[in-house]
Each structure stands twice: as structure tokens, then as C-alpha cells.
Image 1 (cartoon, rainbow, N blue to C red):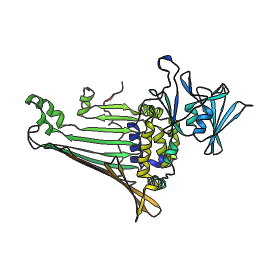
Image 2 (cartoon, rainbow, N blue to C red):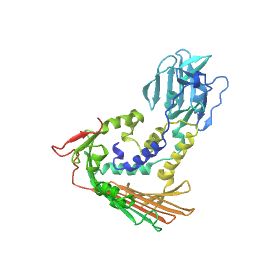
Image 3 (cartoon, rainbow, N blue to C red):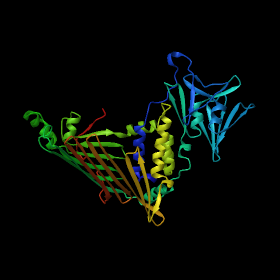
Length: 456
């Protein structure tokens, strides 16, 4: 996705959120072999049926064509001479011929054929069509609530309403024009634990770690290490401390990724323990190309390919459509997702302040989010994101702050969290940055290194 190469933080966040909301896949099956009474929910509302009702044939759900498509706002027609049903909505035309396993979709003058595994049919002077193909032709998401025996249809485009994302498009376009081949990455983490009473911790614990590397077009080279020796204070006896000390003292690892061959490589003392390896000097390989193929299959590779030059709005809609629907309550989930996106990223959410655009949102009455876009001439050159949350109740206090900066020539993230509970105090800090560099990552192990496949 060329346009999002330097705005990866945005899409990564969206896909992560989508993954958290992923549910079970749709499966229209009759319980105990009985003929189910099928209901249809469209955008959170039940669709009424009069003389005809949905039915299941060969484990596929078929809906009365006119009743459901008209509820979706489409104009429906039937040509008896060709036994073809058609529906038109918002410049998109869908045509299905009875008995044929093909649907023809016309949009902006272009015609494409959709292959179906079942065909539309007529029964009692009514036309029945496979619900998934009919609804998806108009950009709707389709799912199945097994418990409620209900088809769930969500018109994702309607959830976004009139929201536009031209400001974010300007940021994506600017980032694409100012491509930086290689970025030097650096990160630092600290964790402090203290028990004022001394009952659980006899002394304060301090844990720290660092990471650095290079991210480029060809791949990634990253080295990370952590000092966890202070955790030995938690060991119950001398023997345990003696056993754990070598492990906690040297938790270094090196990671290399070759984007062309789609291979990951790991090396370090910890790897020999994790995979029961024989040598701490060996490199362990993992083919992430296979994992990528599974991901593409799960999220519909044909739709993903269309994101190559997609706008931010199109990418957001795509992300929402990847959430499987398995419950009648999922419409509320998608509505909340879209509300988050529009409150944080839409043109309508921003207020111009000098050379910046600022959007503020509050999630669940807990997290305060501020998004700031910096304008320079005709371009949007950077995005800053701040998230703050605090809790003070029942003797527990917690404060969380996350600050992120994204621009073609600089990326930073700072996260801090402090929590106090019954005399126990915890403080966590993470700092990360990415800056341009002339260095090129080493994406494969050194020549002559022993390489042990992890996926065999």
C-alpha cells in the first residue's frame, strides 16, 4: 500500500482494533436438522416479512429478493423474458439470472462478474437470492447469529455518513512523496516496582531494556537486550537464584527480516532456550510468507489489493468490513468503531488553529485523545497523537499517557504509566524513535552461520 508506507501507524492501529473485535465466522446451519425460522437484521433493525420468509437451502441462506433489497434502499425489478432480477442503488447495479451461479455488478460504467457457489431461484412466484452475494455487491457486511437464527447485514458506508477524510489523505500523499529508504530505530524501556511495606518486596526492583536497529525497503535488522537481574530478589531460595541468574543477565536477541524472501531470522541465548536449541550462536528461521498468505485469505485478498491507491476513507471502510459478524449486537460494535474513526480522523472532527488542525475525543468517559495535524503550505506534513487516562478509586490510582509523532522524516512514541495500590508502586516508561539513516539493514544471517528452521 504505497500511499500508507509512511503512515503505517494508522493502518496498524486499525488492523489491531479489527483483530480484537474479530468473532466467529458465519455458518448457516439448521439446529438438530430442523427447519429454522430465519430473521434478518439490517443496520440494527429487524426486517419485516409478510407472505415470504428467508430460508436455508444446502446450508446457504436465501432471502426474498425484493423485500430485503428494497429495505436496503435499492430499486428492484424483474425481467420475466430473461428470468433476471436487478437491483440498483447509489450508482451500483446488481443482476442475477435464476438458475445461474453468476452475478453481474455494474459500477461507474464498468461491469464485473461475481462467481457464486449457489444460484438464485423462484418459489411460489417469489425470487430468492443468496444473501451474502446480494448484500456484499452493495458494500454491506454480512454475518450469521447462530443463537438467534438471524442474518446480520450492516451497510458500512451508511455508518460513515457524510464524513470525509481529505486532511488525512493530504498527510498520506505527502508521506508517499517524501519516501525515506532507511530509518534508524531506537527504543528504551524501564520498569520500577516498590513495596513500601516490604512485605512482598524486600527491596525495589528496577528492570530496563533497549532496542536499536534499521528498518528499510529491503528488510529489518534489530537488536534488543534487557537487564532483569533485579528480579532475582523474587526468587524463593539461593538455588533458584543461581539457576535463573545466567538467563536474566543476558536476554539479548537479534532479529533480521528479509522482505523479498519473506523470512525472519532470530539469534541469541534466549532463542536456544525458547526452541530447545543446541547452540546459542545459531540462527533460527521462520517463513512469514506463509503467515501472510493466511492473513490475506482471512481478510479477502481481492479487496486488499484495491487498497494500493486507496484513500484513507476507503481504507477505514475496508478495515470495518473485515470484522466478522456473529451476533445481532455486532452492529453496535461496528457503530462504535466508526464513531472512533470519525471523531478522531474525519475532516468534520478537526478545528483549524493557526497552522494546525486539532481533533479531540473522549472514549468511554475515560481516555482523552487529541490528534494534531501540522500544515505546511498545501501539505499536511505530520500527525501527533496524545492519549491520556487516569483512575482514582478504591485506593487505587493510575495514570497513563501515550504520545506519538508521525512524519516522513521522524517517528517517535513515548508511553508512561504509574500505578499505586495498597502501598505498592509501579512505574513503566517506554520511548521509541525512528530517524533517517544512510545505513542499510543486514537482512540475512552472516555468511557461514548455522540456520535452524523453526517451522519444521
